Amino acid sequence: MQKGTATPSDAELIERCLQKDNAAWEAIVARFRRKVFHIAYKFTGKHDQAEDLTQEIFLKVFKSLDRFHRDADFSTWLSSVARNYCIDHYRASKREREVVVEDLVAFDQAPASTGSNPQRTLEDRDRRTFLLAGLDRLPEKLREAVVLRDLQGLSYQEMAERLDLPEGTVKSRINRGREELSRLLLRAQQPVRRGGGQRPAGRLHTRR
Image 1 (cartoon, helix red, strand yellow):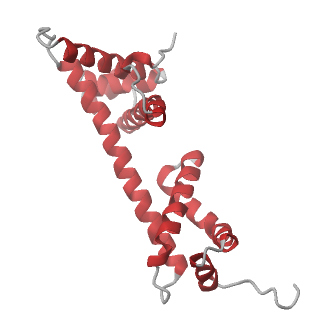
Image 2 (image 1 turned 90 degrees about the vertical axis):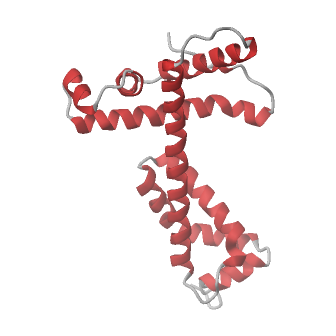
Image 3 (image 1 turned 45 degrees about the vertical axis):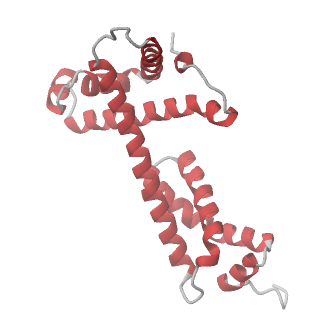
């Protein structure tokens, strides 16, 4: 290594970042990317989701950099921000899955519409079609688990007996099914958010 090219400290890079030095920010990302990815991967267990979370965490860090106390250890602070972001992400994803399940149960148990409000009847029908189309796209084992638990109301023990599986496996399939269903429905709605237009609820393609 040539003289005068010593690796800059975290504090030096942060100061340069605050002065709008893009190269300094790239150096911070390169230095800590593996650490942040490992934290994200522990929460998701999936490489692609951990990659997405890593990018989101660094964006949050960049926006919060001016609030970092210079006397603190940057690596420790970064790890704390990453863990808190992952926890918030998990809670939000869990709530999205719960909403999907609540919708499925509500529509499965709802009485037939009297037709007194045609617009509401059409909206309910479209939403039900959208939810059931997403359910139809699940792998068979996951779809079966979600249907037995959330639509038919079977207990874990009853499902284990019917499917001839350990209860742990049953619970795992239910959680995976709910997570995948939520992801399918959110993905189907993304074009609406980007384009700003209204997309019919029943446009999610089903498997043949």
